[in-house]
Length: 383
Length: 136
Image (tube, rainbow over all chains, first blue to last red; front, side, top):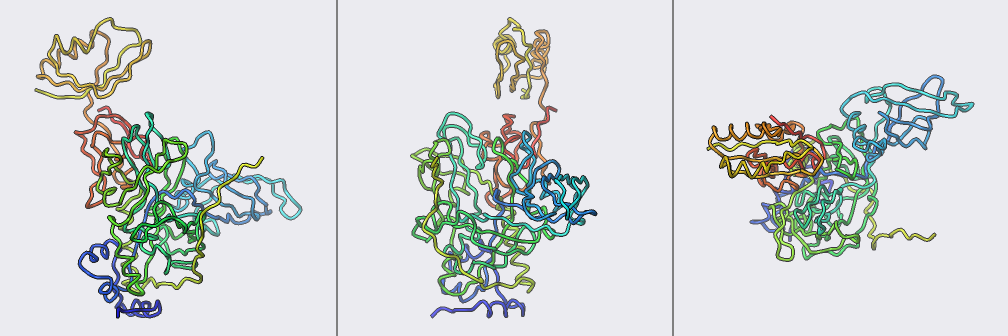
């Protein structure tokens, strides 16, 4: 009978410095020679990591009040509009927001500048009210002058994602990078066996309130992410094919680092942001051991034609081939390239491993598990 | 024998001479066109690798100068800000020449300048805009 352990038992071991913590890559290679039962016996926690572009990201900010006070209505930071349709000096900086027509600098860059400690130009106007008489403001703000910088990302850490190819005769510029014509390349964007939700595909240990590594700081899973979908078909290893579950994440951006939060611009697409996320997976039992042992060759995803209007599914590829540099589609060999940094993902998983090993990072029991879903609604055009 | 890459800039008005043909026929220079952007009535650009003994290359360059074709050697190809690179791999996706590749073991970007054909696709493919072209 394989060993079972509770999160409290694991935390006791972490506190006393006795916990055995491995990264998902280490446990995947250990899995070649060990059985799930052996791994369940030996390993307490497995750390994961991912560092990819995650557009559905942003930051709440509270600027502090002026004297006399102002209810800011139209607000820009370095000329990029931010959402101010909330209370007086609160705003939300959406990562992909830009100051059109210039689309290469946007919310993601503002977030990165603020995290880096640089000054940013705040301009705001308002109609003025009896309680908030001031009608305009122009000043410089920074991480040290504002009250809060709370990163809240509605959709991060996608569980698996498609491979993108282009069947047309012209270059396609997409959020999956530059796709060369006539299947000239294929891009993909997860960290494979290191990826958080691929190491706990049924989310037995990840739920609301899970403590995580987030942008270089400690963060939390706030909720399931938008477009959360547990209804995707899975392969024989229990891995969903293509984009499935997602996470909404929250954390203190003031504690974050530009090593793990980086603004990006995808040619002729727009601004996005690289977000670093790492989630510790407690090895509760043999079933969890089997999950965290998952290897790139066992993780598969769909190959999608970004050149076709309906984004047709053309085939399937596994991550051993994708990271290996070549996949085969209908007999044709296609060069592959990642968009998500495995190098930084490793750094995240390693950092988290060190933090847990040193007793500075404890594992959380989810306050609530995620509900299963049965697919997504699409938007009907009814007028 | 010497191999060097050049950026040739053609004047908008036609020179009336088949320049590439002459370089091959008259000067016996081995010519490899890496990139071409030439249309009538506009300034044209060619990125060309020329292989010949140094003396012959010099003569070829003098001939082009006579024809009002500017001929600038490319001593360095592209450069990128390595310290800021996050090794995402987006540039390697477009590098059909194989100069930018991901090292499977270290997951780091590797750049082999000698393979670069100066197609410039990496300049726009890098989401962090870390590449620039250096004409030497």
